[in-house]
Image 1 (tube, helix red, strand yellow):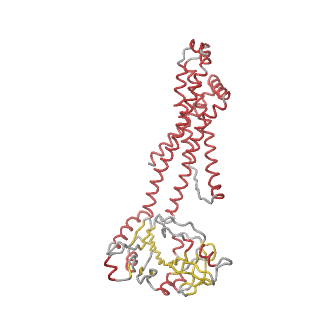
Image 2 (spheres, helix red, strand yellow):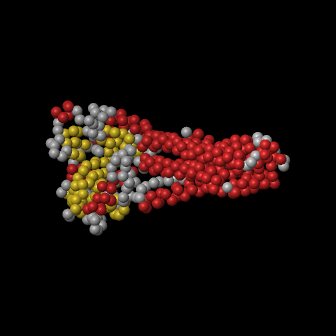
Image 3 (cartoon, one colour):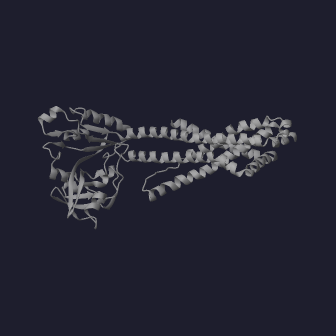
Length: 454
């Protein structure tokens, strides 16, 4: 797909260059200049008709540039979300399996997910250079009269690096916090705003399960994930409260117990998630297979392994296909515009029959008539293409900030340079293809009959 896209781009560039060279050669000759001037004068005499005939080309060219640019921007955003997971990372999550009769009759507590033994075995994989464990559980957080139902994320300082957590004020967790089981926490932006609506939360205390924690940092607002394999799928990071993993083990134990409301049953998980990092992208798949081999020993499928590199490569393939599809759809509008020009040119031939007869009687050859009408068609599509390029650029640079400011909508656009060259090449080609038949038809008119035409 990438080879085909490159080939199309090169062909478009060569076509535009060849067109410019031919145009330069035509203008360098007296006869060519006269033909071009005559074509421009004829178009200027019918300004409204000319503008209406090139309107389809303008819209088509602008559509090619804007559609492909908005499509490129949206897909690039999706790719960046996946890249933020890290191409050398492997994410393992505990995933509750469907309840079965045997577990319901034997125990009120459903035990599943990543165990301490699994975690230790992950560390034996030679290519793994870093592991970031997480224990996640919901808990209400209190400050004075304020309360916020948050998600407590017990983790290590490496979490900030691996997930690119932006700290707005204060700091993130450090190794000393976990080693000394310090009662400190870092608030997400929503949690900070709800618990401390009037003042800064730094060095202030919050209550989590009757334990007091000092706020040492606030995380800047982050975009929620859409559940496409993110670090914590389909969750709003801004609601999180981060505490040291060592502190969580000392206060809540080495497992997370989630009691179901209104029931005696619950869930017990040792690790909610572990993110592993290998040294090189070439080692990712082998490490992923080793992790799956370790987890295959579980009697039930109670874990989920996500390899961002696989998702990234798949997304890039989808991006290439989608770009090609958008280009084809937008190019159809250029073809429709070309048909409109051909219709106008055919009507023009009938209207100017007498003029053609006079030119033929004065010695003009058939190729002169063909060139006159062909140049008129190509001039129209070239002007339409250039106006369309300007309009398309205005759209992709003006619409995103306008949508962001007035409609609070995120509409990313990334200039697709190939679309500019491609749309111009197609515009000129449309002028040649759809202008050739009317020009050829005009050249076939008999001079005597044309002079008699009223």
